[in-house]
Amino acid sequence: MGNSKTSIAKGVIALPGMVVVIIPAIILLLFDYRMFNLYQDFMFAVGIIPLTIGIYLAATTTKMFFVIGKGTPAPWDPPARIVTTGIYGRMRNPMITGAILIILGESIMLDSFALLIWALIFFVGNHFYFILSEEPALEKRFGKEYTKYKKEVPRWIPRIRR
Image 1 (cartoon, rainbow, N blue to C red):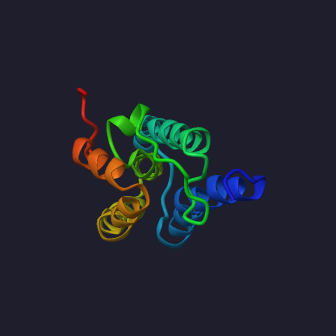
Image 2 (image 1 turned 120 degrees about the horizontal axis):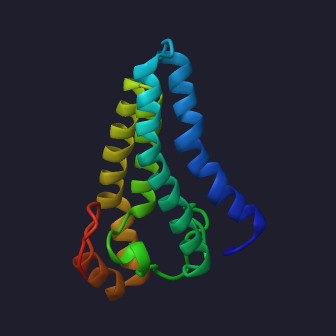
């Protein structure tokens, strides 16, 4: 468990790769047909902003899970310790926020309404998953430490001040 190279590959590449690369590529192949133009070139440049922030969040939080939590983002190899420092001290789900920002950036860059819908579906699905499954499981695993963290740190919108 914990830090095997196979677990890391599955947790860092397979799961996020599916959400931010494979599914968006399938959506684009199935639903999007367009020609490049100046508007699209401008939107491509604008989309780099959320994409870059999302990649930063995904990379930073994945590293934090590995280094601090002694696990991966994957449900089959979760962190053994709760991570509450850094960006996790400002919001509870920066990894998912990063994935959503990546998909939004892709949507803007590629002028894809279908990817915008995918970002919305991904957010809503995760929102309910966290409320109904992940948060209760984390309360069982980490007890009062997670309950306190949950009360102090917002789920989605990062708090500015500590």
